[in-house]
Length: 353
Image (tube, rainbow, N blue to C red; front, side):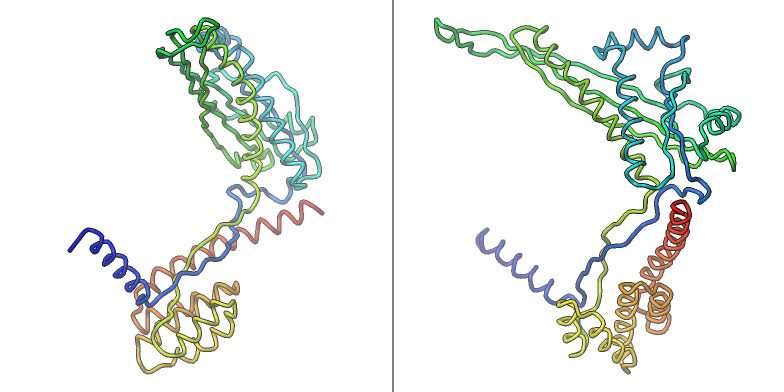
């Protein structure tokens, strides 16, 4: 058999196997709770920046920045962009009655590591003076750059024609490390602690190493943009979000399964469910188990998680449908997350009152 015949045989076999599968995949959107739950009594927030280096470590930090071509103000400007990004995003979400950026001379002993939390005396003082119920704090903002050089032979075009020359290439990888916390003074709880590291790559070239390196200076705006994006992204940690999930459902077993498949494919899921429910009493255990499994699917689609769990449990317990056991656990996890989401949505409604 030739190589092309072998490939054709594999393709045909794959198509046949797929067409013979007893299941098909469907997808749906599922809303997830926010990673961070904000108590309903938090209606106004303050934002501070404590990522600047303290005096005892500032000299070392400045030397590090100069040595790595970062510039002494790069972290400061990047952090300020992060604060603006967070503030703008929180205002846009319209979650709180008041979002206030507070300018304070707070520093960190080591600007390159996540510092210890602020004392509750300090947190309470800041919140009290700014009429805030919670405190968002940028605890860490640090950039670390590594630069490398290379020289490559090239042809340089001159009025006298092409002449051999050397082109210098400089590349820089910058790590931007940020860290955020949310303090709740009422419960004396750190609601969230979230470090993030992102990379920025820059390249420059020129006829000598100095020109090549100068081409990298524009990275400051990139660092500020990353800082802003970091703040915007952090604001999303208190917002529920959507994900797409996939589910297998049975499409083979009886004529009713075949008909239900076509109805499901055209979006008539409830009509498909009528056929599956008929088959849930089928004397053949395998068919009944598949039908019960599909009934769990339609109940999940319709948002009835308790009923979905009941059908999935029945599929496994009474008919030994093994995929149903895993599905039961998936549904229980969804129910748990749904309860958190419901509490969060209730809290958000109260915050907006």
